[in-house]
Amino acid sequence: MRPSARFAYGLRVHGLAGVTELMPAGTDPLPEVAVQQDTDSPRPDPHPLDDRRGVRLLADGRHLAVDRERRTAVLHGPPLTSDLLAHPYLAPVATPFNRWAGRETFHAGGFVRDGRAWAVTGPRTAGKSSLLAALAARDVPVVADDVLVVEGTDVYAGPRCVDLREPVPGVLLSSGPARARTRTRVHLPPIAHRTPLGGWFFLHWGDAVETKPVPPATLLARLAAWRSWHQLPTDPAVLLALATLPAWELTRPRDWGTLDQVCALLEATPATVGEVVLR
Image (cartoon, rainbow, N blue to C red; front, top):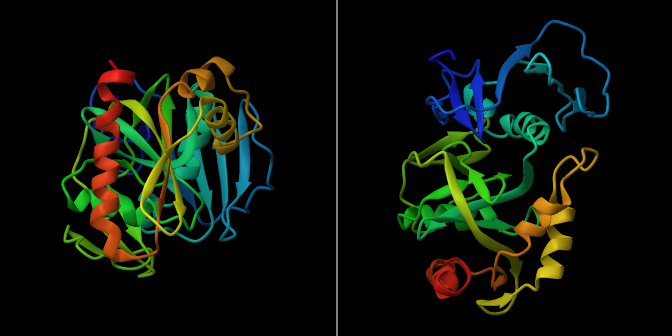
């Protein structure tokens, strides 16, 4: 175990010692991956991910080659700065290696309330990052912004940042430009590597601030649909266990003026089920 290893998404990551958004890996046994950049070699042809390797064409034209046996992830293309390696390029590295480790990964973020992590998910334009940044500004620990890694019914922390397309009122945390100045990066404090999962919130835009319970059968279907890397097999028992956790639809208007109300509702709702569901 090399001391320079960093932690993110439940992995011991090598090659990113200078990426400040990642926490020290510690001594816990974790799957390992070495992240490398190759700016000179010909880019490999895309290849579907299987149980050993795969090559993915990324949205910007780069190629990501992952190899399970070698425990390597190679980004082919122009060099990337450290802020980009922290986010968004580490997420597509983390998903296959976690799936190979028997974990599930979802396009979701999360926050911590009463010692448990609460997943926050929704479409790409649902305002997930802005809501998590607003919670962080209220001293609510944020687990992750973009990818939620689940092992059993525990979740792993992601990089210590949330990227925003536009400023969010009331968010006064340490921040700065990132991703070629296309985002404002809000810096998050370190948290525990692993936290028990309490339940799920699904974000929607609407006319009023309200929550509505999601039935287990509906939740199961949603979790199956939100899994990453569908071509890799999953254990149905894992999804069934996750679908027994409480879940809500969270609806709110596109109005910054309701942000305090939304954050208060997010923080209060888990507490209302804590004694009944999670004991």
